[in-house]
Amino acid sequence: MIDANLQVVIFNNIYFAVLTLWWVKRVVNKPIIARSAHQPDDPVFILWKSLFREQRL
Image (cartoon, rainbow, N blue to C red; front, side, top):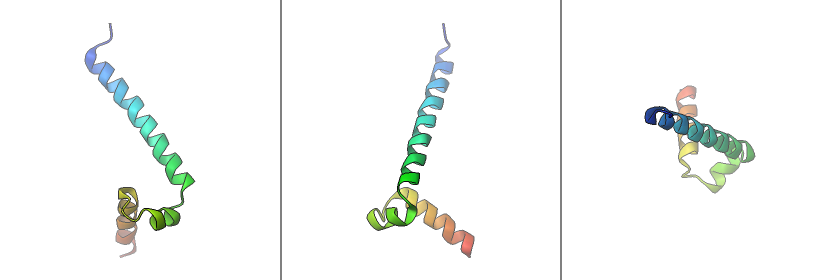
């Protein structure tokens, strides 16, 4: 029998892998400039914009 903790770890790894693939697919399909026009309050865009702003300063 698989340990309960191990089961949770495996599930979390699969979940995050799927989530990451979905996010990458979403970002690739919608360029950042196009996304900013349609979704200015997108948390991912806000995070990216703030990181980019910090790099320029």
